[in-house]
Length: 298
Image 1 (cartoon, rainbow, N blue to C red):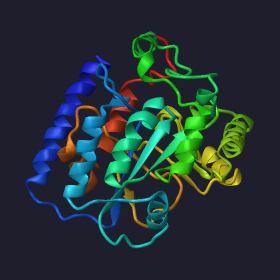
Image 2 (image 1 turned 90 degrees about the vertical axis):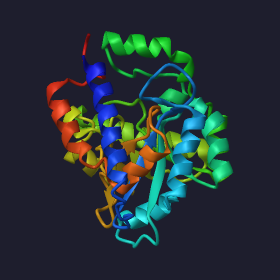
Image 3 (image 1 turned 120 degrees about the horizontal axis):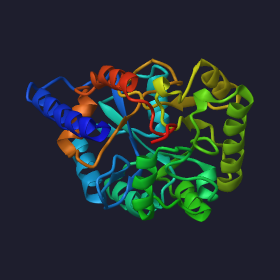
């Protein structure tokens, strides 16, 4: 039921977004989209995968509509209050999948765009992986069937990304837990150990962070975790609350929205225009009805 409802909803929101574009909305400069992706690979339908060809079409659509791909520094400056010279968006990836190294880099390089990848060191080290800590039978079965699409990068590949000028490297915790549900000392350990491991591996400061799962309703973060993110030396944090970031809204709790396999360039543009911002309300309602599969049993 969960999957069927989501598929119907995704189809409906795409239609609403495309209809909204026909009204020729004004391109925004007071808000910007932060997009989140995971694996860039061809395979069965999954929220976690987008093909390289689809990814290219999404980015080309954004460029053709007049949106600029922001660097991480430009996006953080805007979140801190700096004026955007033109409408823009930021690209981010989570976890550290090998397909990002193999498939996303050529697309980004050919388009002259950059992105940030938030790495889970425990995944790279082989100590954890999708579906992470879930005991949900359906989720376990799904990831078992798609295992080949969710292989981690090697540390050599992470270092190459860090040195190539296309990707910035950030932290995504050490083991990919629901951070907001952890005890204070466990949160601090996840934050400090992941940062230390990444800095040792890439040889540079790592001070940006994104929350696994990213949704407060499900326990991904809390006021305490945000405090500890600051105390552990991170200068920003990103969530997965579905809306655009507002210029001047601050460097912590920056919202992101996904780019998915069923979406084309026009859909990415609709998101950048803000035609999906209403989804955050539907998201909260859905989360009150359906429990988080990443912590539940079948």
